Image (tube, rainbow, N blue to C red; front, top):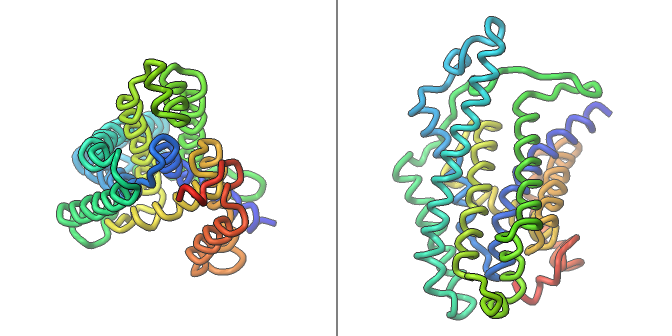
Length: 316
């Protein structure tokens, strides 16, 4: 029972990150009917920019965040919160700018071409970003410094949940709820939904479709960047190829929930995280990727609509 509870927490932690990345895939697909294969690299860029931010800000130990946990707990908490807020905002803005440039350079000129051209352009953008990061940071694994958050944990139902897991779950849930409310209850969110339904009808209603698409390429990459920051803090080791690995899992999560459906991406991410965690705990860690691909194939065969989405098999 203790193993089940621990894997449940691990799965929800990882799944919430998948969900954040999956939202980027599903928003772009929902509006443009395009799979943005470069989205995983935007997630990876978020992790690398977090590494740069910690270096520039001189962070890397508990003392750098305001004092040792045992001696000055309040200062440590304040430092940790300040670190997360500053770095998360900075990384999200920077990656959103890259996403915006990507839309303008790689996708907009091909918007009225055949369906294959934007896909090839997305793959090219993915390779470009991956290689650019490799040339700047090097091909080896990079390691985020220790002590960026206080080493604190709390016992819950017989298992220990770390501060980092609380932070990942809290930030992810807050962002998911915030995005859902933004899309459902704001004028821009309504414009995004209208554009997703029909571009021409949205234009006739006075909606600036190009501006809406730009916002989609701002919101999705920003969420992906925060996910990259969280996964960097969680595992500490990052590599320029991680965008492909996590991107594929997040893409699978989007299909699992129903690509194009925002709540579906959230549900799909959490479910995939739970499946991977339970598979790792009860079978083997080596089966984690096999489980991801099995889920992807199973969904496309048995239920191409996803759990909450529309039919996607014909569109893909």
